[in-house]
Length: 331
Image (cartoon, rainbow, N blue to C red):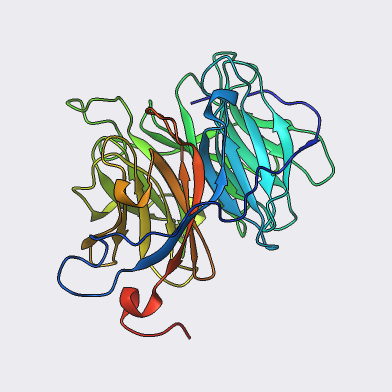
């Protein structure tokens, strides 16, 4: 996946207000008579795949707006970083170079947007930032690979960038400076027998640890941040989750994960802290190459990249059934 940057521009909203009928998966209750964990799934925003609007990553802002990375595929369209308000208004924050891709994005407490750029041009490949009312600037170059998921530890002012081709998590200071290898090794590398050479993919900083997904190995991993920021032992939280792209936590306190499984699996899976998994949504719910999830209150957002025909790129929204998910009502 791959960017360059231009002016801030507003683009018309495409009726981002619930344009599809709700559905409830026949499988997301586990098939045992239990209640589904995700209900009332709707299309919250429809995108034009032919214009390069293929969503890759979502970040929820304090005002409940979303920052969405658009890959720019097909490759003859520029990638974009877009803000979508709850009412559906869209603003293009960054426009990239043809052939580049904007992948993971995250947000600092001061409103700075950080994002990864995958580019064949060494002068653009790496981790970038967009300050409030400022211009895009590269924080750190990354070597030839695939910059993918991105997370921030606000306390240590450190960004963690996944490199899917090199099986590496890079540490990048939010103040800028050289990227350093934070963690690498077999657990983060691609499965040599996998269909795609994609290792570590999604990344989240959560409760003092860096959590990552491995696409081709189908694993969810937790890596504690030890003294002086060093990585602790890699712990496998769950495995057997094919095509595991990016993911989100139920909230800042819970270790329950909503994992997006891309083509050809087309699934959103709940991963519980003990490693058990439960299918929450499938292609029957309209999933179309899901790349990531995001949570805002009791709402789950799913980015559908629409890679395969009919290229149904969109943003879906569903309601999290907290009682079914956790066994008790949300406090």
